[in-house]
Amino acid sequence: MYWAYFIMTFILFEFVWITLELKQKHSNKIITKMSSFTNVIVAEQTKKKYNSRIWQNVEKNKIENLIDLHTEQLVHNCVKNGVKKAYHSLSNERNDQIWEHTHKANTDNEILFLDIQKEIFKTCENSFSEQIYENIFKNKKKYCNNSKNPPYVFHPIYSSVERKVKDSNRHTYTHRFKLNKYKNIFNYLNKKGECIYENNYIIPSCDITKIKKSIFTIHNTNFINKMFNIIKNNEEIKLYELNLFSDLIVRYLIEINGTVLSSLLALKHSMCMHIGGGNHHSKRDKGDGFCIFNDIAIAIDFLLLYKIVKNVIILDVDVHQGDGTAEIFQNHKHVKTISLHCKDNYPFIKKKSTIDIELNPYMEDDEYLKIYQNILNNIKPKKHSIIFYLAGVDISKDDDLGLLLISDHGIYTRDYITYQMAFKNKIPIVTLLSGGYNECDQTLSEKHALTFRAAKAAWITRREHG
Image (cartoon, rainbow, N blue to C red; front, side):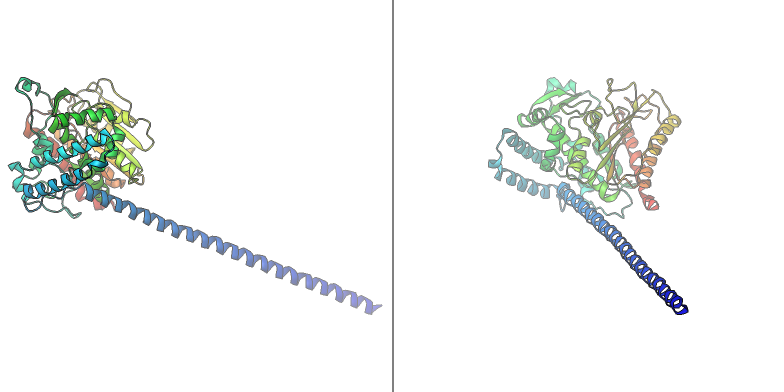
């Protein structure tokens, strides 16, 4: 009897022991599997992060290479060892290349474009011959990122176009478009003794074939051909508050190259100044308000076309609303238009920007800067972005077309806090000259120079923002 109880107890004990052993073994397998599964997940996540970093670096290098490539294509390389001689040979070489490929042009529009490009080279060649640039061009330096001033872009054709107007039409040249202000500002920045900026400016190319696609994307073909035919036929027509003639239209075409180049240099160096540009009244099918081609819109289309940027902010502080850019980019998901303008000033029929801030006439510094600071506070960092800053000085109390009462200190402060905001948010910023209409050339140059001084002061502090 006792032996039976003993045997049953032993069997029960063995059964419990074996069960516990199997359970422990099975549990270890689960733990091992779970541990192995976790390690796989961690490894996969690490791999994904590593691949993501590699992809980001590849994309970054790809964009940087694109910027360098397009910059090289849009920079004028002629001002070396004698302006006129070097330019003359380059011009002839390019003209020969163009006409070698004329037989490939299969439409009237393409043939017209080739004709216009040839005329552009001729006109640009003449613009370099002015004596006022001789010493400046002779001492030109190559731009580097350690410069005391941001890169700046200028072409002598901006002011050197000859006014070919018949004697009977000479009275029509009473418009307020200040054609000479561009060379005056350039010379003011480079004047002997002070040299506000170093002689390390960049000249845009005269070859508009690189931006052809964007020109025809932004503007209506009939409008473009109408402007081209003025060049081809050497016509004189009064349109858009301007007396249009061949050289003047060529000037506006080169200015587009200047704005595109300036935007690329801003992406490369964080900031760039263009002594030109800002033709924000131009519409798709016509010019307006001293503007022919909308260089801002064309430059933006160029950057988006080549996937150099993904988002664009147009920060327009000219006293007049940028109705052209507002209309062109209305409801565009990648372009935000911000306009701070006098509500009672031109244009009298406004378009809808993303953000419109309308100012009362005769506003002074404190109120103006308070409103503007609120706008800047709402601009947030965004990857692959750029700001097109239209820094019109026609808000000045001394301006003949302004209606606002902003002092020189107010203009300088406006510009300085704009550049500080851009550096803080790590958004590249390109400055376009835009409006300024004081009748005194010296006064007007000094007004625009406020923007360039503010940019230089901000440029020196850029590394503080990392």
